[in-house]
Structure formats: C-alpha cells, structure tokens
Length: 91
Image (cartoon, rainbow, N blue to C red; front, side, top):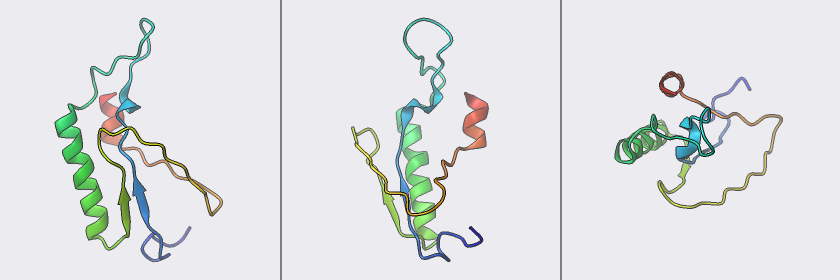
C-alpha cells in the first residue's frame, strides 16, 4: 500500500455508473434530477480515463451508457471505491 498503481505494476479498471447521485427520500422511485447530464458526464469519464492512461497506468474502461456485467477477483487485502468530493457536494 506504499506504492502507486504504476509503481506496483498494476492497472486500473474504470466503470461509469450513473446511479451514484440518486435522491431516495420521496416516493417509490429514485430521482436522478441532480445527476450530471449524460453528454457532460461522458466527457468527464473519458477525461478521467485519458488522464489515468496518460500517467502511464494500464487502463481498461467500461462503455459509457452500456449495460455491463462486471466481475472482480480481488487479489489483495482491500478494494478501494474512489469517489469524487465534488460529486458528493452536488448530491
């Protein structure tokens, strides 16, 4: 845990997920009214993927807007879900 992903020879899998900013306090269905518009969100996701790859880290990415099944074999003691503070402030 003292090495970066690049130093450890690892890679990053980035998966877009629009359901992170749901409001569930009212009614029977979640509201996504505060979620980023899809076109803007796709640009942010693509920018993140490009920035990670430009840093020399092997990068795999999910397909924005697609239905995906993702499975993981965790080879280590932890899994980290990285969440943006900016995104939290909007939700």
